[in-house]
Length: 315
Image (cartoon, rainbow, N blue to C red; front, side, top):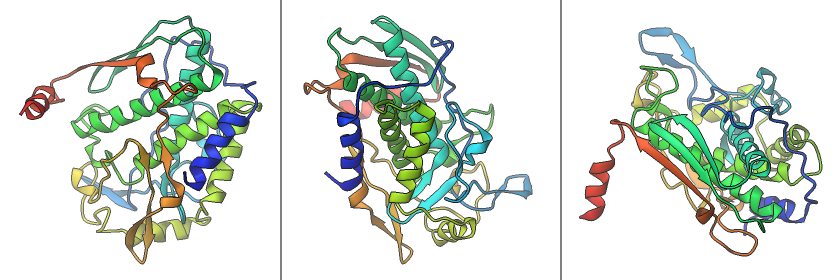
C-alpha cells in the first residue's frame, strides 16, 4: 500500500467516529451533477466562433481558499500541478468530496431502503440504497465514497456520448482527461477522511486539502502552474483546437477503477506517480462487497449506444 493511501486509510479507520457532517436542510434534494463549473484541461484555449476569448482554468497553491460545502468563489478552484500527484482539478476534487458527504448524511438520516431520483444525465438516474441495521460507521463512510465515485464515472461516460450541463454545448472535449479520475477519487478519500474527523466538515476538508497539496508538493505560483500546463501542450492537449471540440484533449485516461496513479511530468515525458495511488473503496469492515448495498439505475437516452455495446459483449 502506497504512502498517500496509507495516510488516508489510517485516518478513516482510527479517528473517532463522532463525525460532524455538513448540515443539509433538504436531504431529499440531491446536489446538482456539477456543483463547481470547473475545469477544462489546457491553457488559453480559444472558443470556436469567439477566438478572442481564451479559457484558462488554472490556479495555484498560494491561491487555494477554504473549503465551502457546495462551493464558493472564494475557494479559487482550478487545475494545479503537484510534483508528486500530477495535475489536480480542485473543482472535481471538492465536488466529489461534497457528494460523498451528502450520501453519508442521506444514509444516516433516512430509513433504509432509500430511493433517490438523481435527475437526467445521459438518461434518468435513480439510486437505490439498502443497508443492514448492523452497518458500522466506517461502512457508511466507505459506501458514501463508493457511490460518489460511481456517479463521477457515469458523468465521464455520459459526457463522452454527448450529455452536457449547458444545452447544445457538448462536453466531450473534457471527458476522461488525464487528471479527472485521480482528482475525483482523491476527493472521495478526502471526503471520507473529513467525515471520520471530529471537526466540522468544512474545517476538516480545508485542513485535508492543505495537507494533501503540501504532501504532494503543489506548485505555488500561477506562473509555474502555467509552465507545467504548457509543458504538455500538443502532447496531452492541443494548442490548435478550440472549445468545445473533442480534439482539445490529445491524451485521455480510461482505466479508472481499482487503484489510480497520477501522471507526472518528467522531462516532458509522462511517468507514473506510483507512491501516491488512490483506490476505490470496495469492502465493508467485515469484508462484504459494497456493491451489494446499492444500485444505480440509469434509463439511458438515445445518445448512449447501449444496444451496440451489448452486441459487442455477446460476440
